Amino acid sequence: MVNFNGRLLEKGTAFLDESNRGLRYGDALFETIRVVNSKIFFWEPHYLRLMASMRIMRLPIPMHFTMEQLGEEILQTLKANSLESKAARVRLTVFRDQGGYYTPTSTDVSYIIEASALETPFYTSSQQPYEVELFKDHYLDAGLLSTIKSSNKLVNILAGVFASENGYQNCLLLNQHKNVIEASNGNLFLIKNNTIKTPPITQGCLNGVLRKQLIEIIKKTPEFELEEEPISPFELQKADEMFITNVISGITSVTKYRKKQYNNEVAKTLLGRLNAHVRLL
Image (cartoon, rainbow, N blue to C red; front, side, top):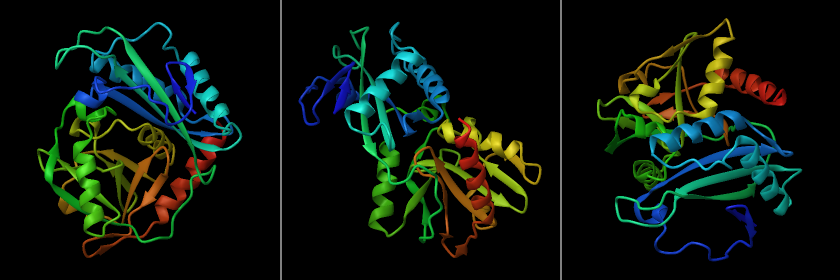
């Protein structure tokens, strides 16, 4: 079942047409959310990011778009898909209603909520090889629009295609200053000795929800020092560890970049603390 503006519809039901502005112009935002046993992980940060992103994109915010109402719609969608007692991935998409060309004429928005099952309720550590490479064909701008989860994700898509075609598990994206800012599907962290480094939002990386949670965990961990500083490609081969974060997979350790092999001891420590953190939500 799919939730369209509060109506539960069978999957495959035709409820959008060719005039949809998300399809035509990418005039849409989305949040990807992890839910376990009807507990919405990090719901308040997700909601606040959505509201901030809607303001950046000048999308009107309806009165009924409260955290409580949207949270209830998510839970109703899970129940309709028999996922209320399981681990699930939820996608909430918000788009401007049809009308106009580049300049919209509508002052209304619509939303879609989708849900699918996840394999495990906990964040886990994979033992599989995970090799990455730089994606240099296109760059992300170090600007505000790059920090939001809009449906304009062409660079991420092309980086994913490049990785698939060349036998990599992921690609790292660059901004126009040739600094490394993120992976195609998550935020980036490097570890050297006891210093954990991640690019600041001003570099154009996604304002990731799990990124924020992990930063707070690191700040409360005395054995590590956090730096939010630009990362040059030269630093990748000097690091002891590299990992990627997002709210669905948690922490994904990179095992190889070119000739550099990485360990994952710090990542496993942080993964344990992240799982302890979500149990308290």
